[in-house]
Amino acid sequence: MTQGVIAEPIKVNPLRNRSGIFWQLWRDKVARTALIVLFCFYFCAACADFLAPYSMEFGDTNIGNAPATLIHIYDDNGDLCAPYVLQVEQQNNLETYQQTFTELPDKKYPIKLFVQAEPYKLFGLVPLNIHLFGVDAPARLFILGADMNGRDNFSRLFFGAQKSLTIGFLGLLIAFPIGILYGGISGYLGGAIDNAMMRFAEAVMSIPSFYLLIGLAAVLPTGMSGVQRFALITVILSFIGWSPLARVIRGMVLTIREEEFVQSARAVGLPEFQNIVKHVLPQTASYVIVAATLQVPNFILSESSLSLIGLGIQQPDASWGNMLKAAMDQPTELLNQPWLITPGFLIFTTILCFNSIGDVLRDVLDPKLQGRS
Image (tube, rainbow, N blue to C red):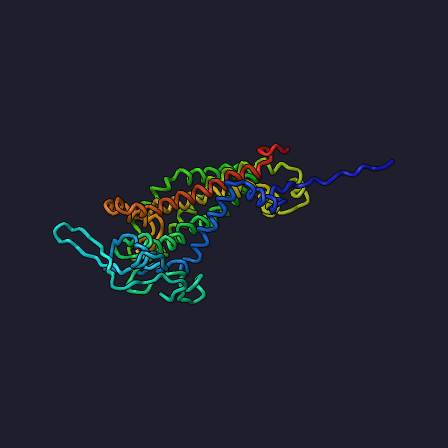
């Protein structure tokens, strides 16, 4: 008589076919467009020093609030020619306090590719002084005009992206490990420990995060650098943003811990913490990936909101939030130069792209939504 063989319980890995997940994302037109847009944004942020014609600190106070530079493509005879610009002179009317900008036709300044200009370190490592395009001084190439300090708005968009786009992932690196481990331990242990841990998480969730940030930002020392303020904002956002994730992970772990493979690992004496990390938490990976793509916009929006009200990244450092604030502080200029609200459009586009990717990922990783058992 043949003795039956008891099959070992099989763990289901929701991310077994990782390459398949990417291709399903890529096949979706909305997700593919969002991925391409985000790739372009992050590439521009990473290569900002090379792509931008001017550095973040550059400023020409002689032409503050200058409008977008007029790029000429016709010569004096009306024939097409290589693009060039003219030097601009600012004139102030002391009676009406109006500024006017006049082009000086004495000399033409061609727009050049790969020009030598202000030195920088590409990726913070490679010293270079080559910029993708630019013009020779004293002419200026302000594609989106200049702010009141004569700083190029177009260049500052690139440097603002470095902070506004980075804060989302820096926040995830802090908030998500805390939330995943905290929720996993709470759900796995259960009982009084679970009850106490969840009460603490709910207490953290009850903190009005935005008003807390306003209060903390208001008492920060005025001498803090932009980098220090940026780092502190990221840490604060992270340490008050882990609790919602912890609650969801805890609920998932309460179910997963009853699975046979988890009980088997416990029966053979595997330490509880290793059991949580090795067998329980990987089963929450589908939700964590989706939650991460949806949480990044929250960090970006929080930083932008604080910068918009003057409590986030401070000038002269650039972020999309404080660039938008600078534009809104000058309503007259905003009416004459509507492109100054470009940072707001970029914030909206970034959040829309992340949310679109998160929605498609949820459909891809959820078997029920795909009709699978």
